[in-house]
Length: 361
Length: 258
Image 1 (cartoon, rainbow over the protein chains, first blue to last red):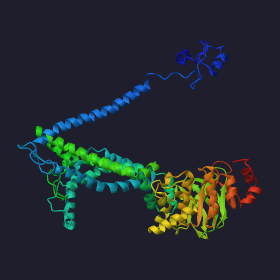
Image 2: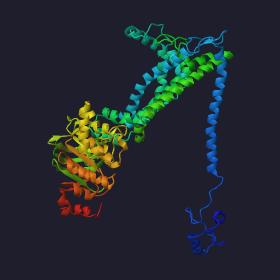
Image 3: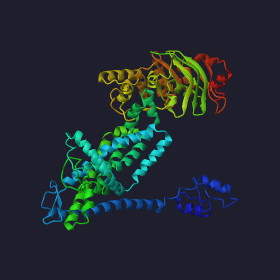
């Protein structure tokens, strides 16, 4: 007590101060007079009653603003530092390369003269990621719709929890499982696919083993939980009013989902798929363990072989000399560029329909 | 294009809770029937059981018999989607599909019925929007999102969407409660026109509205919270509002309770 009236008296705007005994002008002075018998009881309520105090020059508000600004700036600084480092390391290696970085199919940066090309790696990265999405997205949509709109509530929650658990398995475990246990079934499947669908070029001749198919199936299982749980949340958020509107028009449950749930969830699902794609593109150890580590561009997804940028970095970094490391860093830059393009494309897709999606929010 | 609805001993539950009990009433074709009563008395529940929307909620079920032109809509062989196509519904809050344009909203029901031909859809959309008194306001922006309209326009859009599939009966669950007086008036005018073609049943909390728009009025009430809602009185609107035969009805419409 005593402290607050003191402060508000000093903080008053000067001109409106009445007298030293009346620290609060206007209405408040009446209150002071009223309670004059008890001079200790002078504090105004939280809503004021005194003159408006001056804004504080320095306080938690300003400190917090500074803190967030610093955090935001730090991100930019770190990104710039990484970019400078990567480019500085990559450029000498690229200069030393005696073959075309874009088209040469091979990776011999440690030899003299160094020869390496990103083509096959970038191709393998994109191909495995796309195949993984092709397999994972329909399954994920099915699971998400089942959990959000068909399963009884308790079963849905339990299953959802299991799916989330799948996301917590480390990727090296997926890689080892894929290499040691899943390779044989995939090889059998490859034989079968080649026998009956061999006329489609992608199902070509063997030998079967650590193939693009094996890698992308493992990747698909890995990205499944992300896409599923995000999509399920998005589908759950469909307004009941829209679902009822569709049902009241005579829609079956599937028609209701098509009319109300899927269009409403579209931007969210695209975002979920893009997150999955991001994980698939950057996945390192699982692909390092399941792909054949070759450097050829081939659409034959059954044959042993295939490679990806991240897997190649993991496999080759230990043995690399200076040029070799520079070459790997250059490949990392290309991966970064691919991810960037994917993200920009996704945003463009969402942005194109913003008039409709914004009003949905 | 309007049919008679007959409810016999209709009782509806939410899980173990009995929301309405033994409702008996007949709605004549091409009339407007208002359901009034205090909150929680089961008007909306009864309305939703007429087009089998009640059972959409988990644990909700209906007993008794509800017929449309002597056909039991709760018969086991009856396709529930066919019932809902025959008995359309307009909700309390305007609920156009947010991702669809005005045009797509109106023809959503037709598309669900498998109509694909553009010319038919366009014709039907114009007809429905004209019937809903919305055509002049939106004809130049049919491709814009339906959610961009004002609340009253959205509600008329929802009415257009409902009548585009040419149902027999239109159920309206407090269609004006989220609207301003001018939009309310527009929708009341619309009801007068629509009853030439459709049987309309409307739930309303606004007794002036019930008196203005309806031919017949059903008064629902409950004894106390937790009891099932019952139909207290059902008669011509004029009779209900001038000379009700049950004391409770009179108390309610004169504002003595509820």
